[in-house]
Length: 242
Ligand SMILES: C[S@@+](CC[C@H](N)C(=O)[O-])C[C@H]1O[C@@H](n2cnc3c(N)ncnc32)[C@H](O)[C@@H]1O
Image (cartoon, rainbow, N blue to C red; front, side, top):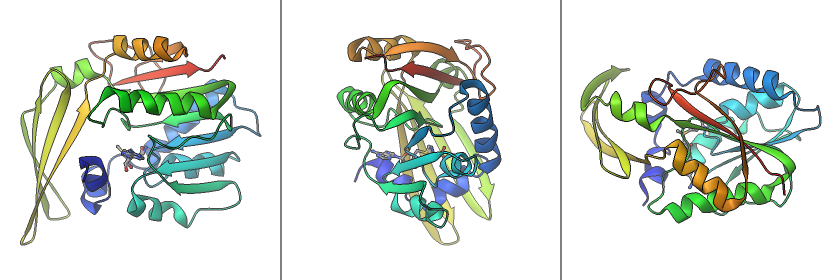
């Protein structure tokens, strides 16, 4: 099984990242709505939506939203919020496409760069392009690979709800790896996150290849300017013009 199918479907992912909560999602969505002023009838796709924290809030704000994710257990957490204008769909983002259905596609909190080959990453972007309406907007919220490497702590221990997480981080030319050893009462588990270290130049190359237009670059959820050394995030705003 691929690491991402395994790890994100485990309850431990949600426990370890419990600070990535609804409040953070609501603030980012508020900032997105303020910045892009989508019309009331705009249709959103939340690509790799997890438990749907962004989708649910967007829908509460009145928008039509589809959320797609591979993790059935994560999707279950959002299912009770489903209604005529909010749908959660279990599918792989490498295959999910709906020609010219969406005004906005969001891929939030480093939900990209998980695959063995760059071709798979590019396929996701190709599906995004197909699924956007003309002049539709894609917001890709990725980590700032430069800062990830600069700040890399090779070892860290966290205790949450009496569960011990021992985290080792390494990187090579292509990926950053996070080995997470978990001790929960008498049980031990190991998961490894593996995310491609994609920098701005590489994203620009992907966009040229797909003939998509990178219109703005930001460095955090408040949409402040991107600084290659110090920004926490690399947030790309991409427009489909053709
Ligand atoms: C870091 S989480 C972020 C989830 C959500 N965007 C959020 O901010 O809470 C990454 C998500 O990507 C999903 N994912 C990973 N690989 C996927 C794939 N091939 N197809 C669909 N979803 C995938 C995982 O199941 C997980 O929910």
